[in-house]
Length: 117
Image 1: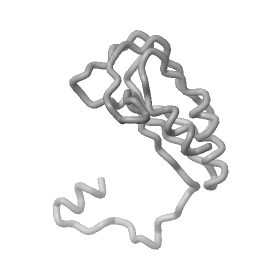
Image 2: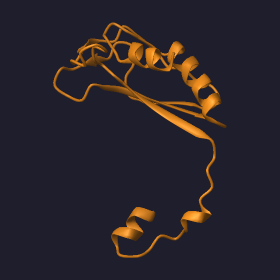
Image 3: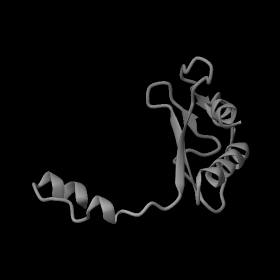
Image 4: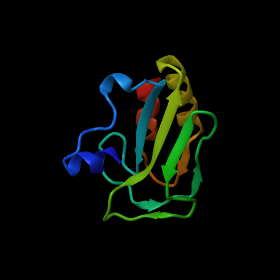
């Protein structure tokens, strides 16, 4: 809504000081790529399981049996985690990454697991 207002020449309907922060969020973009070389990893996903729970969201359109083509964007899904603060968010992210399963192809999941420890 605000983008349309600004594009049409109108100002924002809220002031910066009216915006209230609500916790901490992190997004990991899970790709069908070799985590060492970032080269595409096409193939068939043999098992797919996404994490869930409070503060965890996964946006994805793939499933067990889905074939990742070599021609397009290698995005498998976006893992979005929210917590009341950074510490809680990181704890949820670690758990969510541990619960996320994509078998049959190489993904960037191991890279994210290493990055967040």
